[in-house]
Amino acid sequence: METTQSVPGAGDGASAICVIVASWLRALLSCILPLVAVLILPACAQESPYIVTYDHYLEEPGNLEVEYFSTYGTQRGGNNFHAYWIELEYGVKAWYTTEFYLDGQSTFGESTIFTGFRWENRVRLLDREHWINPVLYVEYEQISDADKIIKEVEGHDVESDQATPNAIARQTVNHELEFKLLLSKTFKGWNVAVNPLVTKNLSPSEPWEFGYAIGTSRPLALKASPRQCNFCPENFIAGVEMYGGLGDTQDFGLHETSQYLAPALAWNLPSGWTLRVSPGFGLNDNSHRLLMRWGVSREFSGFGDLVRGLFGGH
Amino acid sequence: MKGIAWRLVSVVSLVVGIVTLAVRAAPAPRDNSDTTHDHLHHHHFAEFAKVPEKAKARLNPLENDPDAVAAGRKLFLQHCAECHGNTAEGGRKAPNLRAEEVQDATPGTLFWILTNGVVRRGMPVWSKLPEPERWQIVTFIKSLPPPTGSAVKGDSSTPHLTPEATVYLTDESVQMD
Image (tube, rainbow over all chains, first blue to last red; front, side, top):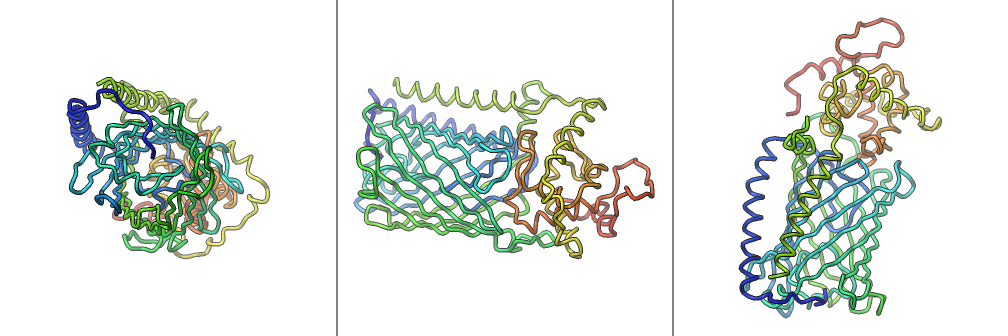
């Protein structure tokens, strides 16, 4: 991620406000999420193990999925880090899902900071299942250069980008639009997903950047057992994903890009919780050697009805 | 400071926007009138006519699997009950699966609907469930008794109720919470 747009006056005062905003958001989430958990019912999800790649399945309408993910990254030429994000995913329609992300990170020996937010939208383009199923993905990001969640890799993103100390990197905030075409197909239990992506930093001088993510996964069993069980093989979905940058409009290709290969495993519990784990390994010298990711999520049904009720609906 | 203010305004705007969208996109207010229910009922089952003949003719490979009803019921409660109700008698958003139209439909028809969804009417595609699991759900649906309160006619349109279905639909101890 390149430095593109400086925030005028982003000094100690601004940092203090950032900390206050982050604290406020944490407090808000810690109050709201338990309330949501109490008022609406958990729903059992069949989540894929992917952390970077998307398949073509959207959130069920009216459901809210609350997700937390962590990425532990090794860093040559700097301190290792732990980046994390909270994801609120809502199924507006069966063909439209929207998501809101809050990102943060702790760099060991430095600081813990809030690094920005993202608003993601996914729209299913075709009503039925086809040989290949396209979904359009549009995301707006407002994140600082200190953001390290590495939810996608694009352009000439390389490991050394994350070596900049937090105190410096956080002062630059980027406004970006990201477009992906999510192509996916499930056949005989195997899902194959391919996500080409294009990103544009809204600063006029910045080029369009390209990247990709591909993944494949399969449940460990294709038939459900008749009893409720946590450890039944059908509750586990294993897969592998690969993602990386493809340069930009000025220098397209694999030159000076980072590439990762990551096995992934999801455990969908009957109680509605999903656990994911995915160790990602850098495939070249521009990549982090290890990105150890894990996440926990829970889906709640009836969130739309709850919100509507709060606003006087029935 | 300007950047921080912009960030705050953006966050608040986004949250308000999402909430507004959620409220506007939520289903219409509950209306218990028979007319509305019939309208929903008719629209959902109209989708059956769009199922290709080849798909309609597909046979359920798990029809005689002794575990299929129980496994299908488990999957139904996990994925379908939130809209179709725990007893499969329908809800505000989704139709009654014990209805005659469903019980008279071929297993292949139900499998096709399950696989492709009725996306514009709110039913997601369920092809993310492996094919055998979708057949297990179909087996369970086909084992359902007639709607509560309706008389058992004793004619050929009465769905066949397996002993497993009777047990699983009445056994509170295996209800999911």
